[in-house]
Amino acid sequence: MSKDQPGIFVRLLRGVWNALNFTRLLIFNLIFVIILIAFFVAMFGSRPALQSRTTLVLDPKGSIVEQYTIDPTQRALGNLAGEPPKEVQLRDVLRVIDTAAKDARIERLVLIPDEISGAGLATLHEIGNALDRFRAAGKEVVAVAGDMGQSQYLLAAHADKIMLDPDGAVVIEGLASYRSYFKDALDKLGVEVHLIKVGQYKSAAEPYVLNEASEASKEADRYWMGGIWQDYLAEVAGQRKIEVSAISDDIAHYDERVAAHQGDLAKLALEQKLVDQLATRADARKYLREKGVADGDEGFRQIDFKNYLGMLAPDGLAHFGSQVAVVVAQGEIVPGEQPPGRVGGRSAAQLVRAAREDNRVKAVVLRVDSPGGDAYSSELIRREIAQTRAAGKPVIVSMGDVAASGGYWIAMDGDEIWAEPTTITGSIGIFGLVLTVPDTLAKIGVHTDGIGTTPLAGTFDIRRPLSPQLESILNSVIRHGYDEFIGRVAKARKRTPEEIDAIAQGRVWSGSQAKERGLVDKLGGLGDAIASAAARAKLGSDYQVRYVEREPSTWERFLMSFGDSQTMTRIARAVGFSLPPGWIDRGEIAEIAGIVESLQNKRYGAFAHCFCELR
Image (cartoon, rainbow, N blue to C red):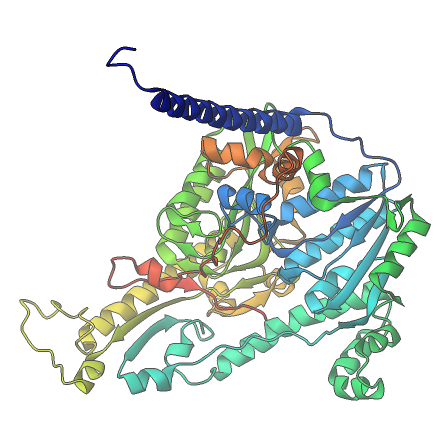
């Protein structure tokens, strides 16, 4: 044996190490190959054909939105973790219902509304209309529910049969809009809030200067909320074939009704004819087995909403013919580039411009669901709408739940404006806020003094009281902004500024009320607006609908290709692997930053915003 040759013990250790290393690489490579094969099988393998007499189960979970506010990575990882994101796109719900109505293999639809946690009345009305179209095709809609609030019930009312759990309830309470008011709190802190507004009813900033709602605010809210509430009652009463007065009387004396039924809310709902039958989930499954086709010991032949959506060809996968482009403006209007869920002045304008410059696009639908926000950002978007019309492409506006203040600003230049009866719109007004804190600093012994080279220098310093000169300047700026707002609305709506001023003043209207006052052209949903756009562009029935949105990255495209079609689940099952729920902490989605973010690095801003949320 050579002196340089390792001993037998060292050679044994090396051999063992090499064997372990080889085994490790082999195992990892095998796992990779298995996952890769499973992925291609899941993506491209044949899927079981949908059988005849299948029941479509529609059970949206979470908020129903115009577009996802959760990015594709989070959505895909949430699906993999067994915690799908709590958002459903309205367009997907409508597409599934309308496709199923024409699908001979789908016999009925089961609606489970319990887990819908956020949806405006206009959104629910649009889905309700889709359920009516499904029923008009000769197919049954069955609602199966536990507890239902008035939002969930509005959808359930469109069913042929409503089955409520014996321990469940239907609670219809009415509409409310309450806000906190901070004047006393700010006074105690020594914060002075200076509100500059134009519009008697422009109440968005009242909480900072008052301790309670002004009478003008209450008057306006009472009117538009009353109109929307009457639309709600009429829709429910019409679907359930009961009198509006009966529903109103039951709500007014709900305490007496509950006491008379010894607190049994389910039996009360049955007596009020709000539901057709009290039934457990097991009872509902038995009914659906008898009406449809049995599957297994207790189940019935069914397909889930998301699985059915995954079977459909990707919406707008190929764009070769003439198109109607849909641009979504959902959320607060703020400056710059913004992700879905907010309307960026620059990013939204770029989307409209992209639709205008695309030769395949023959008409544009602007879908608005926004309470407004930054006035300048709203104007940037409006200009792109006007330029698109000037380029010869029709622009139709479709209002969702809210299209008020800045949301109306970006809508006013459309060839036509469509709204649902329960859309919240109007609020044509401008306001500005200036906060100063000289008294706050004085409370802790801090005082401010110095000089400026001009009377204007230092007037924006929040440590100093608001100067009369600056207040005069801001009043002039806000007045000019309001005049510009009503002037542009008057030009777009072919009215005089005086006529618009009479229905503006920051006042909020329902969609029906806005139509009566000429702020809206027609009542209808997104599908109506798209059909109108196609008709104006003379496209006949030969056109495609495409949503113009921010182009996803390559990685996002990869994730989206299977993130929403349950492919992640099929991959996990194919390799015999599952992850426990809750392994990903996605965190909470931040609420709108609103005025604070709109200011960015500026000392002052003008806002067209409507705090007109219903609870």
